[in-house]
Image (tube, rainbow, N blue to C red):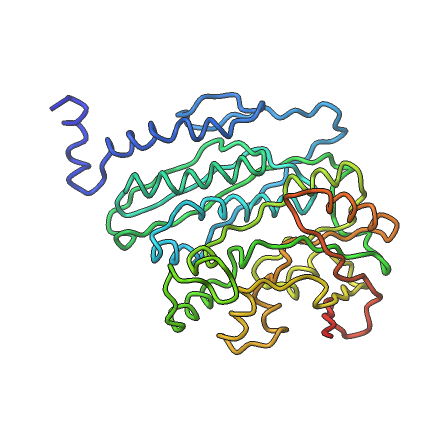
Length: 353
């Protein structure tokens, strides 16, 4: 037995395998390096991640930070024994948040915690995190793998993540300039993203569906539909911001339309949304039916097919749609407009056909 193995024996007896952790880090190094961008100023293994942002051409650089997790969607990953998508979710939830203010994500840090490190599962998770970072042109700068015996049930883990982005202060998107007449452009979601999964899991468990059978109304399996990762909008939106003035943006997450859209609206305005101006994915029809929910209830819980919203002036709307329609990584729909707010009315009005 090596000297290092003897030194770690006491900790191993307590349930923490230091050597397994070290081997895991060695196996993911190339994956992590595949996310490195020109600003990364370090190799893997330091106590802190070093990043030197390019601020050339900026008047007043500002950092924008966000943190999030995957939530109870992880329970389905455990149930389906599929772990290669939740890492994408993890990155998406944070980078889409910092994007709302016009910031380009710079780097990401992840936290993976489990009772006993299963390297194959952990590698799948990190592979997903790396894929999410590549899709958002964001470096995986560091993270933490915590093995905590007795803290989590066997076979389970938890994830959290932290993104830092940067925007030039004069180009910060705040929503303060939104006025009546402005246009709402919705960007299609890939599914339920990472919200409403306590209800989704309950409905799935009650449905009798098997993970490997076709999902109702779809040619994909139940597992593929229910753990489809959150769409990342970074490239499409940043490209648009280079050309078009955008007044406000919304990441449609927990709370759906009714809670998220007002976060970027002046108090004197209402977002009037035309339901049916975008296609409804099969997963939302199924959730509505299985949960015996109304569409207003659905729009309070889920994104219902629109994961991100842009607000721009009428004169910019046509050009924005033209630019978005030319891309193959996003679907865009003109879904409504900003109107004057009536006294005591809500800030989101959904008009049903």
